[in-house]
Image 1 (tube, rainbow, N blue to C red):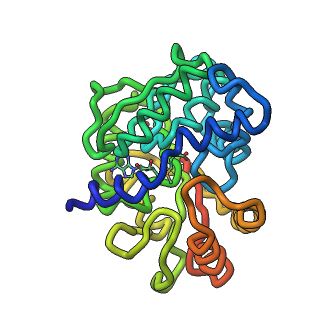
Image 2: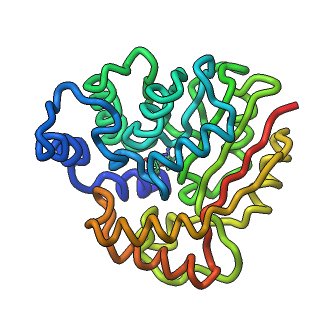
Image 3: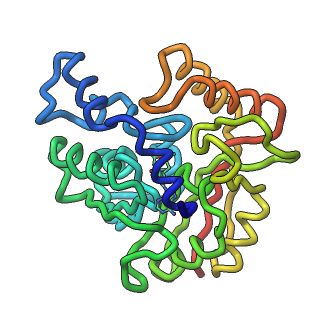
Length: 263
Ligand SMILES: C[S@@+](CC[C@H](N)C(=O)[O-])C[C@H]1O[C@@H](n2cnc3c(N)ncnc32)[C@H](O)[C@@H]1O
């Protein structure tokens, strides 16, 4: 199995769409027509959920005129949030076929298919022409990708001159990760956490100029602790969340946002 096949297999456990629609039904909603916020962030597979997406989108300057490519779009929660709350046009690309199917179906049910669309594929080879987007966003995906140079080179190709690249990943602060599972990988074979400096070097290599780096560590720990006490996000087991909190507390890993632009 290739690394990408192993990554997709990791995210393919259980039927995530049924689980999310089940949440809508359990809350007395209509599973065929609901607002993105009715999923209460369960469709946003990153630390901080919807609030973090608002924070990152605001820092990335996303607005109603923005054309955004969401690199590793999961079940489409980030794209729907950007479409609904910011009025942006978003195209998501994701490796995991089950997630792409869920993303399209959930987006249809929220009436946002005119603004948020999805393709199945690898972000190492994007199916878009040059200068197609104002902003590229990558949220909690780089931990699964060894070749960050290639991701950022592809992003630099599809983003227009003056456009933005915003990354929000879990990054390595020092030492070596030994405790698995983590939410993005059951074993070290598909985990490629790297320090912020490796990201900024790869961004610079691709032609981006780094503007800002933010480390929302305390908010991250608080979010994960609440997630554990409420049963955790769909498809993520609590031992992975506990290992992540321990790695945050020991200074091994941290959530980091990096904002950059093309000259
Ligand atoms: C933790 S989820 C984050 C999903 C989404 N960004 C969010 O915040 O809700 C990581 C996602 O990255 C995707 N992914 C990992 N490697 C990828 C690659 N090479 N190309 C495209 N997607 C990838 C996985 O399929 C998974 O959906």
